[in-house]
Image (cartoon, rainbow, N blue to C red; front, side, top):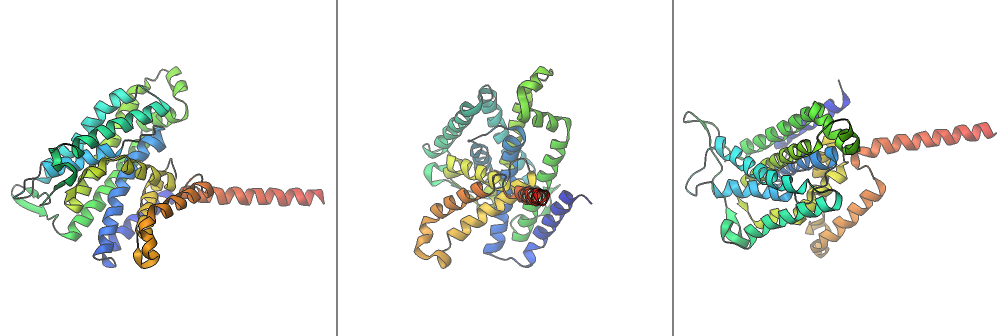
Amino acid sequence: MNTRLLSVLIGLALLALAPMVATGFYLDLVVKIMVLAIFALSLELLVGQTGLVCFGHAAFFGIAAYAAALLSPQSQGASLWWLLPVSVLAAAAYALAVGALSLRTKGIYFIMVTLAFAQMAYYVFHDTPFGGGTDGIYLYFKPEAKLFGTALFDLEGKLTFYYFVLACLAASFVLLALLLRSRFGRTLAGIKVNEQRLRAAGYKTYPYKLAAFVIAAAFAGLAGFLYALKDGYVNPEILSWHQSGAVLLMIILGGLGHLRGAVIGAIVFTLLQELYQSQAIFGAFAKHWQLLLGLTIIAFVALLPHGLMGIGRQLAARRARAATTATEGADAR
């Protein structure tokens, strides 16, 4: 069996068995990690696979979360079958408008334009009564999964919601893996390597980049939808540039160019956050957790330029250099 596939299956099996040993806070932490892993996978499609560094990805995450909260009645749960697609489509629709304009720029200009659009969305929710302003808005009931009046499952149950999020993570990973193996995915890889050469070969790259931008936003929207359901509360901070920066750090930590790296990066980043915020370990210094996290990320980037997924490659390169040195030394003798 392929090593990559085996590692993915083992990871999914461990997540499926996690509720047997994790309860309360730790179970909620695993759910949070899975939601952020979907978010990281969505950005990996843009940055790691297409070479489009987007610094406004949190806008799509937050818009879907707000759509889920705003469209949910306060007296009962909405239907999952329309609330989920509508929330995801809200994120995708905003991405279509943003991408249609921002993709006409390149490099630092593209980064700044996406950041500007994200900040616009942030201030709409932050500075206006729409969505509760700075106080945010509550989602009192999780959506209902009914078919012909019969409940298929109840998302109000912690275990049911856990496995629903796990199913969404597995589906997201599989869909993105299949997408990247398709002709469309190979075209995105060509855009990342050399867009000019691809254009010379007769490809119109703009539609491909726009499609990737919208698809990535849709997956970010799925993550935002699940985030709203998990906490039952959303506020404007989930659209801020801090959130966009955090998810970018996740995929850098894991290793750009790998879907598994995005998931691993989400796990490591979230666990580091929880570790450094622990007063039981760091005492009063825990309030400076961002300093510790920043230093750790600097160390990671300096020591592992290809992320955690590049450890094997680095070790192999070191062994090769050591073997070459030993051979040259023996020849010299």
